[in-house]
Image (tube, rainbow over all chains, first blue to last red; front, side):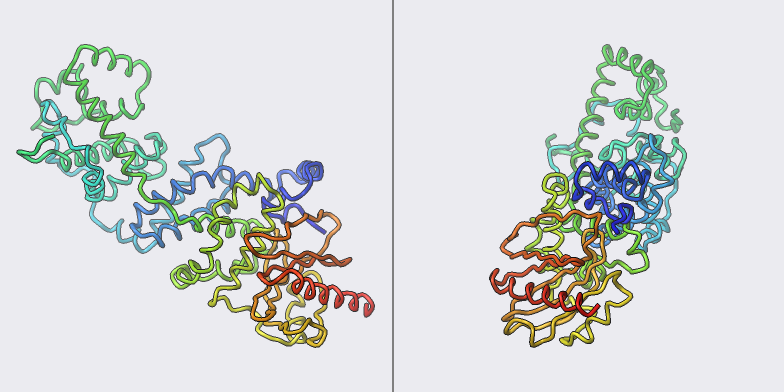
Length: 205
Length: 284
């Protein structure tokens, strides 16, 4: 006997519409609709999660494994996801927590990162001279190199903000730090980038 | 919000109207409440220095966004992921460690070169696995069949049972499948057709027997699934990506063969399998 609960999501599409509806009504909320809901929310984020995983691991195979494991964990834990809350933040948090258990993640978390270290760059941060606003953005490679030079913790926060366009409060949840820390990391990340991108003396803008 | 250090306590920085770094960031990130945002916009209208900084910060943010979107997954990564999710969301498969296909169950490091070879031909299928699901219902099953068949072609893919003997292959499935089937005797098979081995697999969320044959050195995958009352039979295309798909049903089973051999010879093999099931009926 075919039990709709045992079928994966794509199997549902193989059933005729009326049968599908009847099954759905009878067995709701079934495993099938749950995993279909999950896929609907999670699969569009695949490319984003992979990109972020690559930035974390700096390795293609590791990034792929990390994303696989993230999806697997997220599906298992999908019952704990509260509808209406930010799914993207939820799954990125799982990605990050999974990353921290990997060898690369453990190594990264061991590197000394002083949250409130006196920042020598603060002189630039005030940004009161027009020269400070001059940075080189014409060369993509320069920016890539600058991003790679950022401390991982700063880069991570900045990418979640600028690439993933996640709100500070959600980044705080993902990184498991207070919102003030998120703001200071983003701020420091941008300051550092700015300094790395400062045109060298004598070079044109 | 700002904790300026000694060095940058310039008069301008302390002026509450000018934007501090944290305010500037919050402003370009759209994190400020509307009232504060309006206040800043009013200030910007009359302050050239702050406007320049906002402009520069916005440019940096946009450039970071572009530069940060840098790594794209391999096309087959999505197929691997969906295969894994489907096997995971199928409760029957839980006791089996990743039963969807041997190619997915190995460590990526060891299979990568092999998987590339086997999956190179399937890349087209793989990318569109998702899209097909909505668009072409029958294509999903056909793609799944072909995907699994391609996986068996990989040299690293060893069947779980390697045997040419039907008396070894058939009992192996007992207890592993919720149905039984009959295998034709070697003499009942069409000429130059050999049983190589078998695998337990999942097809369309149902456990399936995968029988591996060769006909004149062409690899053939035969999938046997239980024919159930609830399921409607999906019409499969006869060919897909240059492979022949041949379907037959018996009262209990659905048989699908996939191969690159010519349709007539594939038909002979399927017919011999169907005939073998008829003898099962009689013996029951």
